Image (cartoon, rainbow, N blue to C red; front, side, top):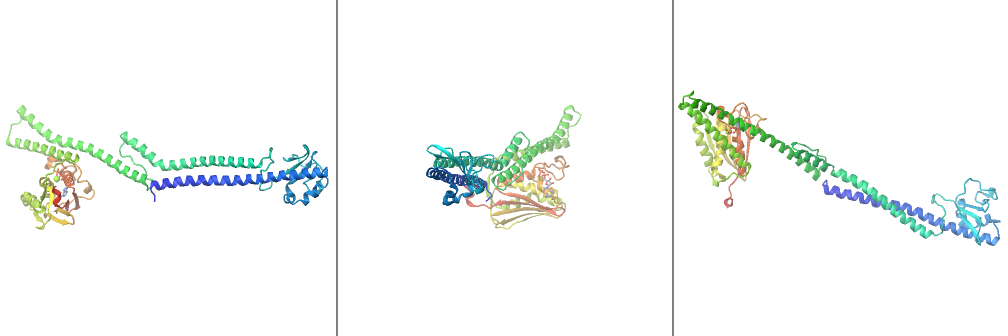
Length: 455
Ligand code: ATP
Ligand code: MG
């Protein structure tokens, strides 16, 4: 009901109805007035004729008041009648006492001459009454034409007024309706000039309101993406610099001969190179995922086997830390349609994270079927993640402990971002729940394998 089309229809309706009503009112009022004038004019002319006849028959005005009193047409309008002779002496009109006296007022109102044989013998005035306040006798006697002309003029005038009114009302409504669009346009221009993150006020719940809401969301996301990109460039530079500085120091020492080459030294240098290679590989994986070009060799895979393979790879490390590592999955779990290597990469990262942040207890890799999906869970009994950090852990280069950098324990902070990208490329979802001090669970939901997936 609050849609823009509804508002527009309503606006058109208001303008149309208001215009039509205005025309109807003006024409109604004008026609009534014109009609009364028309009736008065005719009455006036008829009375003048009757008076001229009387004058002719009686060769003068004697006893004209008796004549006027007797005639029903005159009597009906008695209070409005004034008859003057050629000297403006009152013959009738101000009560019997005034008859024969000069016209008592200053200005004689317009009347019609009473003519006999082409000679004026008096003036007959029909004063306006409350129905015809504006009645003045016509110069030329053609009441029908006057009436039609006046009504036409009134129709034209009312059409003009209604048009102006519709214009004013229409432009007011149009301005109101388009105001949010103008605001949006102005803000998009500001954004085009490079000022990201602009917001507009959401005033309505119609389509424009929805547009404003999605614009605000888009603007926010855009600003966020821009900030993340800058942050990422800074992070990459930082993470590249540390191993490069180490390598440069060592190679310079070796070149100058100040540093003797030893197995230990070469091992450190080799590790740094591996770190750099990992970082570059991780970045490449992410950029491929961003571009939607992550190639996936999907096959139907038993989730239990996948979990067991990952469990086996980390069982030694777990034992070294005195942790239990278990795989819990029913034997008949439906298959998932995934790239086994990529999924293993995801699970490896989750399990190595779990190992890193768990000092006692156990790590459980479990698989369950939930309606159309298969859920893989990696649960640890480790330090957990604080609630304010949880929303950020899938961000690139995010490390909960910001001071810890890859040189300390060879992490890049890209693991979860890559895991998310890979899972999403499989049309799946990855989430984390955590209770600080008690442990963390990562949940991967993947669509269950259906045979025609392979086509
Ligand atoms: P990388 O995996 O690239 O070597 P990383 O492990 O630091 O580096 P992620 O795997 O993306 O990066 O993890 C991001 C951050 O999330 C970690 O630095 C850590 O703070 C937090 N985190 C991840 N898994 C856990 C966990 N199981 N328990 C507690 N904190 C975790
Ligand atoms: Mg990790």
